[in-house]
Image 1 (cartoon, rainbow, N blue to C red):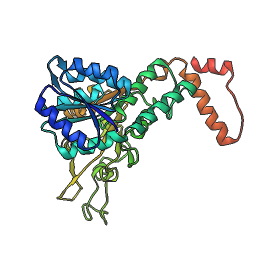
Image 2 (image 1 turned 30 degrees about the horizontal axis):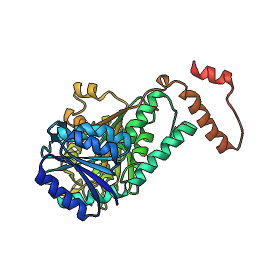
Image 3 (image 1 turned 135 degrees about the horizontal axis):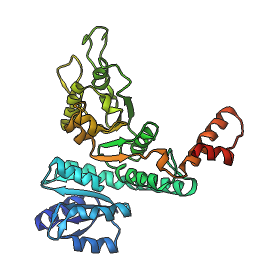
Image 4 (image 1 turned 90 degrees about the horizontal axis):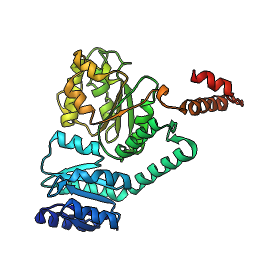
Length: 349
């Protein structure tokens, strides 16, 4: 049976949580502080750790790094369910957050997910093996130290539901990162929908995002679902989110805050259960200073930031990428070509 480590200094809370978890078919180990929790982790390998935020000898988040290194799901249990706490936990690698008093239905759903999480750990292990053997991490090519840091962040945040903001110059692979995050998530078998906010006319983007009702505007001859509905229970990737008009940024913020939106021309609120991934090649802090992007929206989107390095900072990844793209061309054309040492030297220049 899966093993859970429960860490809480409140005997009543610990007893109640143990009873609930045991009833769902889990073995349990318990600890009342960080020291005893570390002792358990040194001797046993639980499938997940559920830890209280405030403990007598420190913050429960101090266990997050050790759990991430061992591939153990880390869940924070807190009576301080603030946005700042949630962001702090997700950035530390928490796969989920429970607020006290613990909602039993939500706990049962979480335990079901934990019981299946071995497949996610195997997926990450397979990606790591491919990286060692072939210099690839999923669809991403390159083994430079700069990209290793990216892979570490992707591995840590992929299985969670955290909102991720991916930044970097054009061509650095932001969409590949988004696809990999979805592939590693618990939503991997649900829809993955991508939209380029900069490629849609400003008068159409609201309908594209939220859908519209029949008769909402000229030409709206039928009801249409937007990407938030099409991505239900899956992942929505908002590429070039910096290009979204300010008036729509307010509506996007509302969806992030309460999980609801209204179709254009509609009156009834629709529920939205999607994981948001966003990307931009602009400096969003500068956009905020210039009044072109909302500071509160940036705060909501940048729960976990992933910055992609430009090719000039990636060492010899250039050669690996050049060979990768050449191999794709050769396969498409049915030819065999190779890059000479002089050709690679010219590319490096």
